[in-house]
Amino acid sequence: MGIGKISDLFGDEFLSNSIHTEGDKNGLEILISEYEDNRYDFYFINLVDLDMLYGHREDPAGYYDGLKIIDNGLDKLISVLNDDDIIIITGDHGTDPTDGKTDHSREYVPFIIYKNNLKPKYIGEGDTFSDIAATISDIYEIENIFPGKSSANHLS
Image 1 (cartoon, helix red, strand yellow):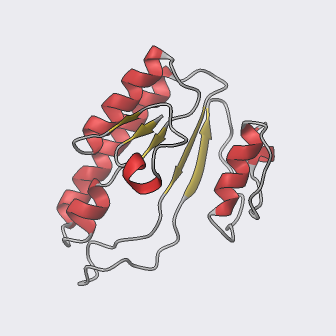
Image 2: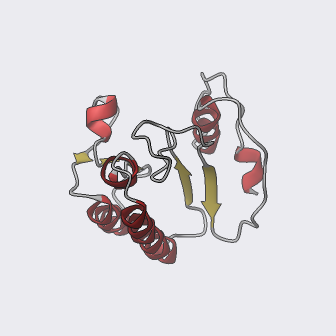
Image 3: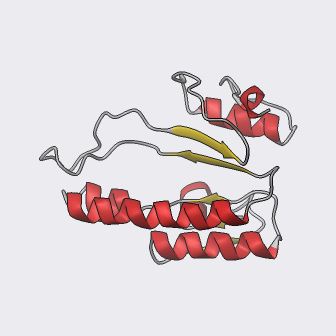
């Protein structure tokens, strides 16, 4: 299931359903509601407020408030997860709201994997976004056609 502008970015041929959202808070609320209805095995959500509303507009206070919205939404999501559920968080670029520029900045993007009862550990820097695709392929036990390196072995 796609939430946010997923179908705009990737098309909808691989989506069972797609819901557009009105901001990050709404997107997280929809994610939690859809998850609790237990209709899908995979949710792909795009949260754009940090990028579009605050990063490109040089608004560090708004960026901070946006991070709090996401943090609160993740807390709510984690509170309803089953033990075998996995959350993957990433981004496609950095957008520093304090660097005096409105373009993408050069921060490393996160690749965070969360699972209940999984101890935190640093697994190093990846080489490509394909690492995420390879990891998802391994989690769902489907053929990995991506050149990236899977991190699924760190989930047990």
